[in-house]
Image (cartoon, rainbow, N blue to C red; front, side):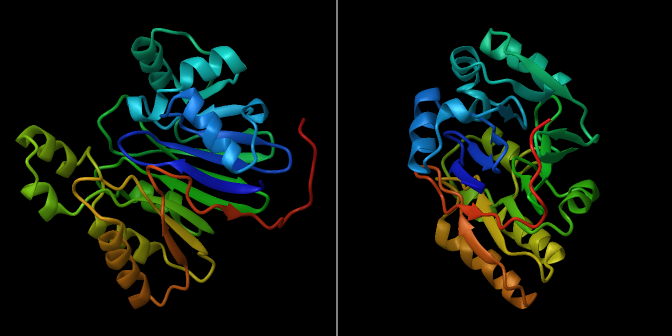
Length: 267
């Protein structure tokens, strides 16, 4: 498919497919290689066609399948240097890395990618602003708060994949230990429904077509609550963007790109 599709989103594993006629990549591989292969098959994509995996950070729910995908299918891993070091340490393997520098744009096939810093409790976590077939997509999850850099990097996107992890009152009420609550609610933790809604209100523009709400907590959030809080905020901003959930347990609604620039072959 030409577009992108969240294959899984949440604390049990994260992975997104992104493809054009010339380039097919994954963003993160936090499921087993077998599970990713099966989910790709649901959208008629063969694992053997994946040309790279872009990694946001080294938490296990984002890198679980990297070792086998890299070893068996020889898929290169695109990550910054600090994340690559952490991956080697955690997985006890040395995939074939292509190293990018956070804050510096790079090309991969016909994708233009800009990795940008986000506040999270890992070595050098990033979000991605990707331009594909003339469409710009912002991928940004696993962040404790919205920095001015995050806002700037997501301005003007046609599509957004944004974290709406939790409802603070549900975090406080859950039976988890205080250290868990402090982490989730902290400035290097995860984004709440209200923070997500505030960010999307600021980013709203006539060209914003679709928003995926990502990394919802299974314990401290609900799909209905996240959709209501974000939907109400976007309605007040007179946004016509469609809002949907990036699911944990099933493949989410795909976004299909319309070509807005002429095709060109891979170098």
